[in-house]
Length: 266
Image (cartoon, rainbow, N blue to C red; front, side, top):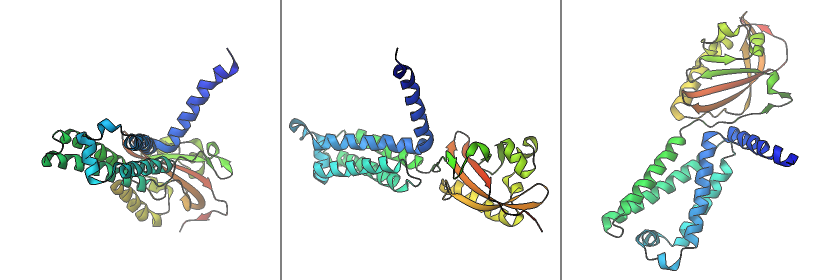
């Protein structure tokens, strides 16, 4: 057995795992819709002549030429495949949802007009599919940062919190930076790590993410002020990642000291 045979599958698995970790479940869903869109576009572009008169194709052709539908599906599929890797993918989700719901409505209407007696079956499937994509679009956008500028993340502070902003875990570097042991910090709110003047803004941001399902700060390196247990403030940079887990929204904060002199909080 060659070295390529041994290293091949693990390399493929690692690459696939890294891609999935990078794009998250939102991106994986867009990948599925994107590939589906390209397949549907091809099927509409190369319809066998004997099938052109079937109720399904005839219904679509009564609204727009099949070649137009093929272009629409092709562009939608390409958009989904491009935005699956982007920090903001809202346009792809909106376009895909609109197209799927439009398909479902066309099929349902064809049932009531008598043009496609069994169109309600396809209509129900397309509407359910569109609803599923619309639901996924409410999940937070996940941007995973493998490395912070200049340093590996394994040397940085890493804090995990739930949707309510309660600390669920952190690494030893967090204890060193903030002065709280793991046992003391877990179960406490993130507000213990920030000056009091920022806490109201923090609570409003958490509420907004829960309501809209995404964070505009995901993946960005943000300069903020941290608060040590002894009351000392210090400059730091924060990168927030958010994703939808089985327990709801989960946040991971990756923190590095920004340098400069620490000051005593007033």
